Length: 251
Image 1: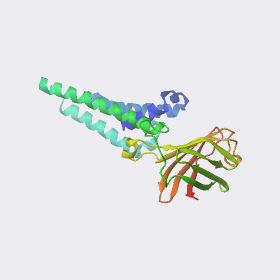
Image 2: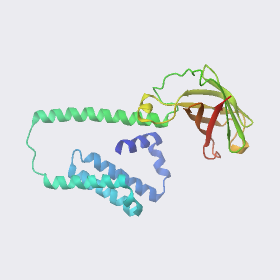
Image 3: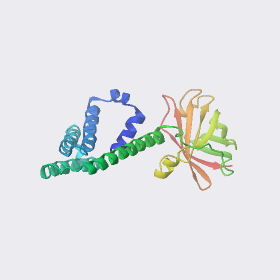
Image 4: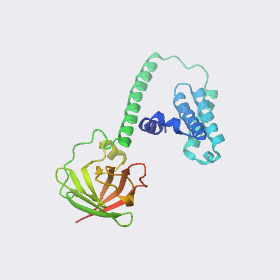
């Protein structure tokens, strides 16, 4: 839970915190205390459990429905167990210098592994495409003309070439600087994140049915499903509606 939370925090940036409402800030603070307590309990289980319970209590005070959100309730129950263990086992631990050295080495290795995991998650979620993604040469099954219809009657045509370049059109706008790339690294494939491919580029003019302005950037993350490419069409501009579902068929 802590790693998942940190991955989003690193990707979105802590500056976004200033845009939250007062209620959302209190919820964010409660979640932060809950997760911080889980980490603190590795070293001070009594204090860690108290901080976790305090964070969960703050979330429940702000939003009563959090009582039924089981991932946070499990974390709070873990905090309670830490407190109970501390009360039962708070006598002095027997000195063991060799064990201390091994434990310190283990914690250093574990910390390095956790940091690597957070960075890999942030890279996979927020980079387009992620770092470590190899160069892509489209196979014959990908090369060709792919067509779909979005928003009822807006035609989408992607001409995928063997060098990875993509031309075509979205409605009456031409695709400019289009390119198809792999959309996930080995880590993304391992944990089943993101899509197989990503088409990205710009549009030569506004597509009225989709909103936007001339030069709007777009991306189309896609999976290959049998003989079709399935995914979504994203337009990047303030007036863009929600992503449009794409089901491209080869012609």
